[in-house]
Image (cartoon, rainbow, N blue to C red; front, side, top):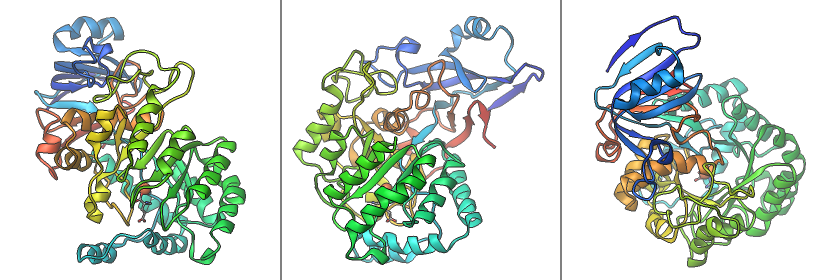
Amino acid sequence: MREVEHPGGAHPATLLLGIGELTTNAPAAVGVDPVDDPTGVVRDAALLLDGGRVVWAGPERACAAGVEEVLGRAPDRVVEVEGRAVLPGFVDAHTHLVFAGDRAAEFEARMAGRPYEAGGIRSTVAATRAASDDVLRAELARHLDQAARQGTTTVEVKSGYGLTVADEERSVRLAREVTPEVTFLGAHVVPAEYAGRADEYVDLVCGDMLAACAPHARWVDVFCETGAFTPEQSRRVLEAGVAAGLGVRLHAGQLGPGEGVRLAVELGAAAVDHCTYLTDDDVAALAGSWTDAGAATGGTSPGATSRGGTRPDGTRPDGTAGTVATLLPGVEFSTRQPYPDARRLLDAGAVVALASDCNPGSSYTSSMPLCVALAVREMRMTVAEAVWAATAGGALALRRDDVGHLAPGARADVVLLDASSRTHLAYRPGVPLVAATWKDGTRAP
Ligand code: NIG
Ligand code: FE
């Protein structure tokens, strides 16, 4: 990689040249037929970033005219990437990064045969309650830095290890310092002091806890599972969250089938996460959420090109949107469960995202490249589907149209791989292939 700097521009503009494979996830913007290639790949490409946005993407041979026309001056930095692959920054739409301590002993016991149980969450709750704000903030920053070094440029962060009004408020407040994608998960598990009084705890979550947390949060979530919250309790929390102005997302189908997926679709959730155990009705509901009344034109998802289609943020012209199935293969890897059946979802026309679920219990990885590798190797997603799901899919799961793709106007969140193609993400698992990252157009250190 060679870099040339011409200081003195009004604000620095960066031109990446010599891109062997540019994944844009924006076929229309780069003149690619979305049915042939929904990931909008351009070979021998160039990409221009300015003012924190993508301003031009296309074949390098068309670049001189394109750049001058758009920028009206020479770029401040020119980076020759010598045939390497470039893609949108990863959008990790599911993490639990406000916590203290770890559960390495629990992991070791699990590898020796003990099953994963929702109740393990309570030990992280105790460690998190005991930690100071500064410790939680430092741990959050450390985990985000690790994620950033693996190409994550957008991250959702949930609360859920506080479970008192003050500790949940603190969790969402600290999360809001680092991302706008903050999720209130007061209904993560019934805390020890409410044992046998789950409905009373749900009253608290829907009342004072929600009131304290909603100002810092964009989303509400519930762990709808045996050992956590029932569908009825989940509905109460989600409806209270909606009444407080929050969008809906849900944990469901992690440990067994249940009513959670259909509840999520019924409530218009942006995403339902895990989806390891699904009934045929669940799959039909997820696929149907994208094709029901109001669908317009143009598909955006590989494996779902037959669905009615949406705008880039996944919403329909009437403002409604479908429910993304966010698959979390780090969980199955770390809990030795069967992987979710991604093919069944994709072939039915559902929209699939991949996320890390980074948390100290069920999936202590923040590596989106690992998730892509697991999705390809273990879940039979194609490389194109997996990369799309980890970028554009995550953006749809957050109902964001400014990230997850590299069309002009998108945020300049970009990953450069030390590899000639994105296939290497799955082909070379565990290798640190992220050579550079730009976040809002600025090169991450
Ligand atoms: O997404 N399933 C619920 N919450 C987390 C696990 C949290 C934990 O075990 O600490 C998850 O897997
Ligand atoms: Fe989770």
